[in-house]
Amino acid sequence: MQATQLSQLVPFNGLSDEALQLAVQQGRLLQLGQGQTLFTRKETDHDSYYLLNGEVSLDAGEADAPSLIIRAGSDAARHPLARLKPRLYTCMARTPCEVVAFADDGLDRLVARDQATSYEVTEFEGDDPSWLFDLLRNQSFSRVPPANLHSLFGRFEPLPVTAGQEILRQGEAGDYYYLIREGSAQVTRPTKEGKPVVLAHLEPGQGFGEDALISGEPRNATVSMLSNGLLMRLAASDFRTLLQEPLVHQVTADEAGAMARWRGAVLLDVRMEDEYKQGSLKGSLNLPLYLLRLRAKALDPARPYILYCQTGRRSSTAAFLLAQRGFDAHVLTGGLNAMNIYNPASSS
Image (cartoon, rainbow, N blue to C red; front, side, top):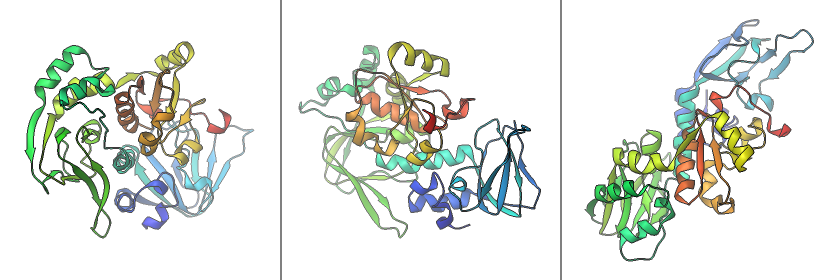
């Protein structure tokens, strides 16, 4: 299996070259003989299957419903085969087939980690020379309980830094959240040839490093200082209990429904465009996570938002970023994987 094959499939078509290479390593190639069953109706498993070669049928198990025929190379084959769980169809090979399987959890981790490069940097605004007053004036901390704020300020640790010093390194585990008090920094990520590409510049008042702490994934970029300066860092455990938990609220499907009916909450699908087009919750809007920082200002701050993705990882990060900007953001617990009904976007 080649990366070029995966680049035609959803959501791989939105990944970087580096992430595609990692996906190739994660995929498991399966060979099916004619008449062999890949999965059965009502089965609950934890894999996504893509048809690379051959032809399969999807049988809904109803006498008056004809089987769906999926051929490799077709538009339907760009998406996972009957991905809803429990399975709505039995999938059988009509010809000898080649299929690639991905563990749902591993695939979602890969997509979330790759997209995070576009939104990891969090902006903190404010011109007050005292960083504590900047924090108090910032929407990022407006929803944090006063008791948490008192503890939060006491937990930040000053960290003197020098020009050229690496603060975060791609691939390492997340251990701290950082705010720049003095100095400037840059965010870089290497290309597949190993040459670093500058993704962003950071100035005093800006923060970084939250995504790895929320997702539990390794750092997805390197942050290094451009000048001498002073950082304020917050340990991962303090970040989660004092900052993340007050800002990221989980809601069940029933609670989300009640919020939509009584409070006018907006369902926001933060998956990539092609994932959304394949199917989404009825009435939802699509704002991919990698575009969130650019388009958040277009959202109505007076309305609550219920964010979801496939598993909850991307939506948790998105909710944190929206909450930092003053939005009433909530995460649908378990994402679409926890839902039993999946409505085509075209019907919404």
